[in-house]
Amino acid sequence: MRKALIATDVLTVVLILVQALIAGQSLYASANISVHGFVGNGTFAVAVVALVLAFVARVPVWLLVLNGLLALLLFFQTGLGYVGRDSSVAASFHIPLGVTAFGLATAAMVGAIVVVVGTRALADAPGPGSSA
Image 1 (cartoon, helix red, strand yellow):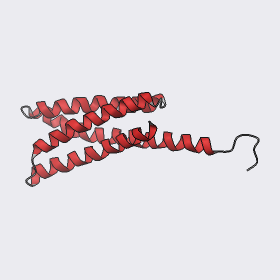
Image 2 (cartoon, helix red, strand yellow):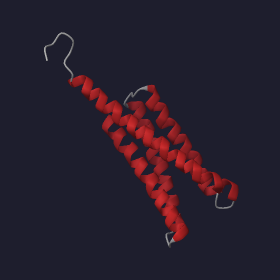
Image 3 (tube, one colour):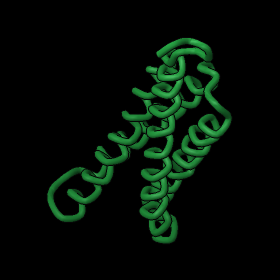
Image 4 (cartoon, one colour):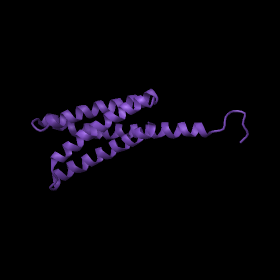
């Protein structure tokens, strides 16, 4: 379960980067902004899966909270994306919220890696009283 959490957190970071690329390409090249929305919906879904995996894997509370905040933020980000089609105010919040989502997703990814690798390192470490 914990390896799957790392995979979904890594995928979330990659998908957010892809969305930024598509958004930039749609502004300055000929990319279709609809694809940005489709990827956004998928990113939200992956973040929800990561939240469920974090809960099932019984990770530390701080990592569960990070994944929960990320899923909540991406819920609002998705909503702003749809509302931003007709509202420049909503669209103006969509970009900084996306940057925040990238930072939070990166923190969740690094946290998952630290928890999984740290757990393995502790399991492989010699116990007290053993000779090294």
